[in-house]
View 1 (cartoon, helix red, strand yellow):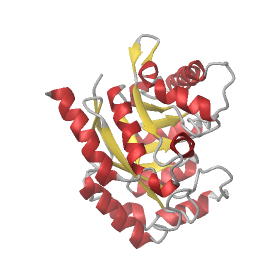
View 2 (cartoon, one colour):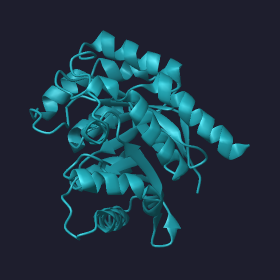
View 3 (cartoon, rainbow, N blue to C red):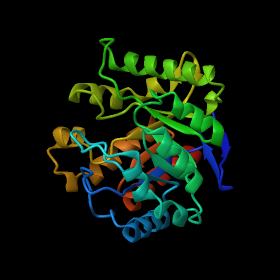
View 4 (tube, rainbow, N blue to C red):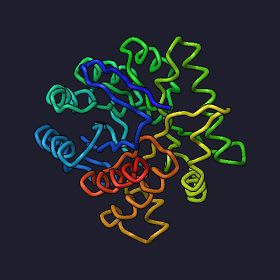
Length: 273
């Protein structure tokens, strides 16, 4: 399945033709991997520009950490961190994704220049669907719940169905949903590994292909699997991204774009050769 999204800023985004690389910009003081490095507006803008030069197809910008036990901030605080940065990124030539679970933040971010909503809480606040519909924005819906079905793959697929139904009931085009199995969110180590191993099963839902994103970059599941410290996990992240591309994942979300974009480009070329 392939879909070309025409985005608000005039950018076009083709999802489904090849695996895309999403580069992470954390405008936070407390993210688990790079908290504080890009908290200042100029540092965030420069880092985003570098990620584009390194081969990012999408830039994902977040202003509130979603690591376990992170300090929650208000919508006003989140927007204050974004207001100077988002307008500066509009001319980078790639789509900008806003990583937030707050509908009011998403709406303002789209006004400021973002193109895509990345909601790690899976559109559980139905107002987020209304925001996406109003702006015509694609959405990334992340699974955040603890497993209740006994099989984490079945549980995530149940979430995919529920989210699709909620979007359809709100009149939102369900082909604009990109699903994220939510590695590291409300899951045990074994559940995370199961999802990574069975990504190919998640690409199809009730007989139809869906769009899928994987965000595993530098996460604790890699640390436990390999014993590597946070700043030693980029090669392992790349290995899992190559595995994901082989399973048909449409977008991989990563910190080290320079390294992983080359790996993903090689896999894409291999598929096309």
